[in-house]
Length: 267
Image (cartoon, rainbow, N blue to C red; front, side, top):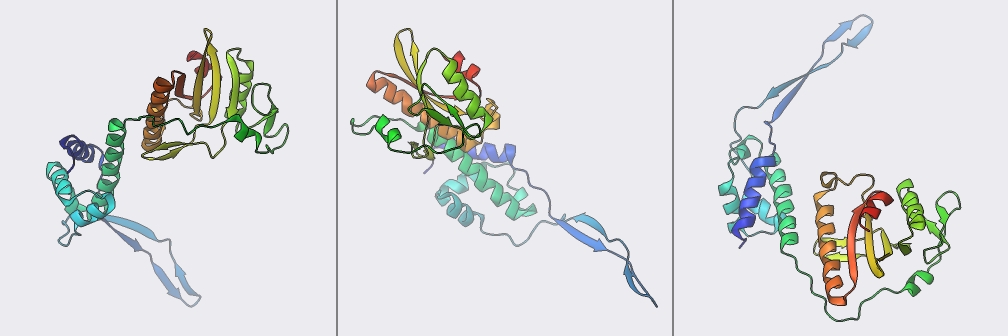
């Protein structure tokens, strides 16, 4: 059975964010002219009319939400009982159900993140520089590659101007000792799915090394601009590295930046 906090959060989200409009009938009208020259059609016009009568035959909302969210029927009933917008269900059943599925899943993801705790178990998992050396870097000079003196390779391959500018910034920042564009196989395992940081950057601060895993925000640091799922994965990633930092005695952090100036503020 769900905790009351999650049931309340689901009901509040539905009342606050669910938009359900009345069903509409669309009529298309046109005038047909028939004469000796043939048949001609004047420009058709559409007319819209709202359906004000509640739907008498409605789908089984409990079974549908149970199937889509994997919550117990009892939990779903509790959520719907707390919803003030439950009357909207008869106005547009399909729209109401689809909105409920989206909002309930969103709240479930948020509560998973709020309750997640990482514990380091053993010392067997690690990544080594050797893994970078075993792969060949391929690209085009002056198009998607630029020289590097601080990465495992002699060149850095980039996919956008943001990546190119970040790499140039890392090269020009004295505190940065080494950095790397992380390969696709490097990911953080989270309860919400795998997440791939974009960069690993080793920085020297007051004689102490600190490792940053950097996520590019694609030009915006606003949390509202990130999808909820992405924000929640990032939060899991931050807690993941906080645990490693505490247990290994090394400074490790996950940060979201859009420019090297944003990164330099962290130093």
